[in-house]
Amino acid sequence: MGFLNLKFLFYLFLILPLGLFLFAKTNLRKKLINFFNLNLKYSMGKYLYFPLFVVFFLIFSLSRPYFGYQDIEVNSLEKDLMLILDVSPSMLTNDVNPSRLIQAKRKGLRLIENIKGSEEQWRIGLVLMSGVSYLACPLTNDFSVVESFIKNSSEELISAKGSSINEAIRVSLSALNASSSTAPRVLIFSDGEDDNLKIEKAIKLLKESKISLSSIAFGTKEGKPIPLSNGKYLKDKSDNIIISKTNFESLRKITNSSKGIALRASVGDSDLKTILSSYQNLTENDFGAKNLKSANVRSHNEVGPFIVIFLLFVTFIAILREKNFVLICLLLTLPLNSRADSRDAYKAYKKNNYEEALKLFEEEFSNNKENKAVKQGLASTLYKLKKYEKAQKLFNELATETKIGREKFDNLYNSGNSNFKAKKYKEAIEDYNKALEIKREDKKTKHNIGLAKKLLQEKKKQEEKDNKDNKDNKDKNKEDKKEKGEKKEEKEDSSK
Image (cartoon, rainbow, N blue to C red; front, side, top):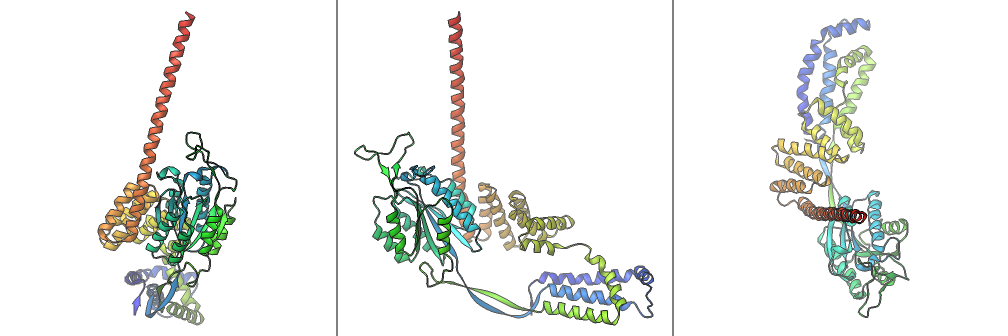
């Protein structure tokens, strides 16, 4: 025999003070008897015992007692998608409005929005492709991080110019193979332009890894010149302006070989929906599905529901035998149910009704600020409502208050996540490092530190750039004022 909610057994100690409380309310019982004109010729003892009997077994059932269990094996199929984003100079071509790169970035953000709306569990990674390719964002289920990398992607991030589709595919496959994914996929957003593309090599890489690649091509068949930052156009060695055209056929050959889908970019989401729908109902025999993971789900033989049925049966018999008996018992126990407890808040939380859960948790917390479980629930609810600073404060307090290693680790990790979401990357890294002092080999924490460090670097670069721009603007304003002053002086001299 065991209990799934062992902490509820401690509430059994409430039976004694409850009994004393009911016994002490003799005057109330007499008033109730007189009010309802009840003719009682025997002891009131059973009116006291019945509510105690009910409360005892209700608390016992809430502790979720069970006799034995069964381990049921189920297969799980994770879905991982590595997105290759072409940021080579040819993607600056504006044969599509406003440019191929901007359209590809918008399509990437729409891809994430479509995945967010699905009921399946996804992880997304990002590889940036130009003359060389690198893993910008490892696989993660924190879509906001991927969105941030996509928004900040530009051709300036990679110094080596040109395109290398083969290299981008190799980097993507390497990242997917290193993960524990069971259903990896690769999706490339590109114009297909690559003078050094070796189609057979790309096909061989995909077949060896048994991972499917799909593609969305950006640009037009007619093409346009590639604009440069100085307002001119990119030229070849013979000083001729290069016309960049979409190489859809090369992308189609590679994707078809791996049972993927090759499409031209559409104005709406029809291209994304076509590709995402092809990922549905993936089985172990499909191309791109590796060995399915087995997970054990433990099913306990709980007796709590039978106890509740038994209580209902006893109550029903009592009603049939003597209505006055049940009436007085209910009136005596009525004050015990005058206020909703934290279970209502947990129910609202599980139903994703976070606003209602927040209201209930705050009410419960105001009455009992020492209750760590309620405080934990309040912090988690604030996090779900994106009130990250308030959530972080509570998680940090919980981590400080507890002496249990596992609880301290969880709350430090959650505090780090709250700081991360609030874009306080430096504080997030500090929380993650404290968590690693407790659990040194935690992969999720190490992974999050890596992401936080990358975003912190990006933030510093952006701040430096903004400061430089502000300084340049100030210098320019000073020069303008100086020039106006000189012109004014010249005008005054000429008038004299």
